[in-house]
Length: 111
Length: 116
Image 1 (cartoon, rainbow over the protein chains, first blue to last red):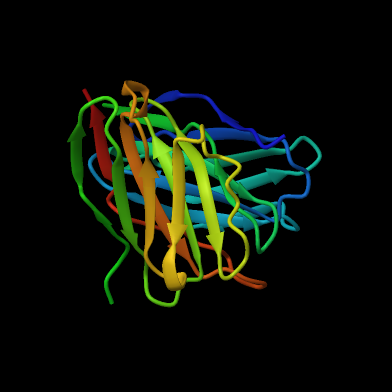
Image 2: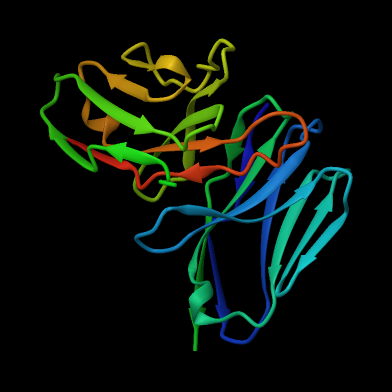
C-alpha cells in the first residue's frame, strides 16, 4: 500500500511546542519529507530525513523517524503565529519513484 | 530563473467540456508531477514523469484523465467530459531526480478548475 496518514487538525498555544504525526505504510521508503503550505501560497519543502536516520534537527524543527513503526513526527519548538499553515508529510520509495503525500495537518495557533 | 509556471490559473467550465491545463517546469528538472488538491483534502497523486521513462499513471482517477510531456519539458494535463467532482486545484511540481538527489519538489501556483 501507499497510504500516508496524518491527523487533520492541531491547535496549540503560542509559545508551546507543536508535534505533528504521520504514519506511512511502505517500509522501503528512502526519503521522508515535511512540506508547508501557508494560506494562499504554494507548498514548500520544510525539511526532510533520509531513511537511515532516526532524528534530524534544524533550528526550531525536530524530525523523528521510527522505521519499525513507520512513524514520522515533526516537532516545532516555541510555536509562533507565523507557523500557522497546513503541514504535509510525504514519502519517496526510491530515487526514481513518485512522491506520495498525506492529507495534511492544519496547525492553528491560539494566543 | 523562473519557477514552475502553470496556466490557466483559473478555469471555469461547463460539465461535459474538455479542459487542458499546462505546466512549464523549472529548466533542467527531469521529474514532473501532477497532483490534485480538493477543498479540504490532501494532495492526491495523479501522474509522474521521469526523464524518458514511461510515466507512472497509477494515480489517474479515470480514463477521462490523461497527460503528456513533450520534449522532456512542458506538460499538459487533459480532462475530457469534465464532471463536477473534477473541481479542484491541480498542482504541478518538478524536481531534480536521480540517485543522490533529495528530490525536493518545486510547486507551481496551481490551476483552479471549477466545473459548473
